[in-house]
Image (tube, rainbow over all chains, first blue to last red; front, side, top):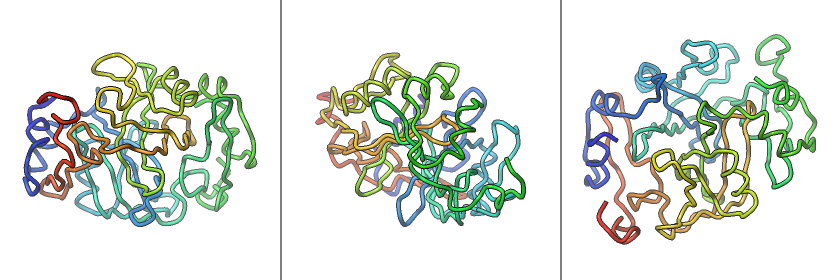
Length: 147
Length: 147
């Protein structure tokens, strides 16, 4: 792990590091990506997890609108561009070893492409998983066609 | 993506799938791992993100104590085994495309190895990152030696 994150472990509150240096030392995966957790800023709901590269993170911090990297489409994914269900950035945080982002957001409507508020609707037990939430909005209404 | 998760998108609440089938169809990465987000169940704080393989997930669901897979040590990581800062599982959830876990937990003390409550203590802006929290407990007190 980068020495930078070791140093920050014991740094006094208020210690600052330039964004470029953080991005350079952060632990992006082999594809140059990092998981980003989106959490509704006031209710604390964990809405979804997606991926960012350095350019998506920079864009998000600059514009205040969350932009991920779509692994399936291999392109920027400006959340809500198609569905209108945007995420306004309230706060962005990086973790202790520089390999995970936490985004506190204001989520318009459902965050999940299925029309549910969040993506975590399969509750697990020792024996099974159970779908325990219905969509708030039909996906057709979000994307204009059946998926 | 597995057809199973497509089917679950529109499944009625109450629909159940055997855990074995979910685990078989889930989207583990090339190393057989999946990100798991740990959230304090009552306050909603996002504490940390770590990784699980299928065996760690099964153990967690069976024992009710969170067990990750340590990528650095390449072994099971029973959270709190060394530090005493255990995570009791309250609820486990899988997301819509079967590639991320959300664990609602009861966290004893700090979740972060630095002695902070959570791992996300580097707040980002367009220009820089700023450490904005101090440890609650010195890491030496958690692990019995300076790290």
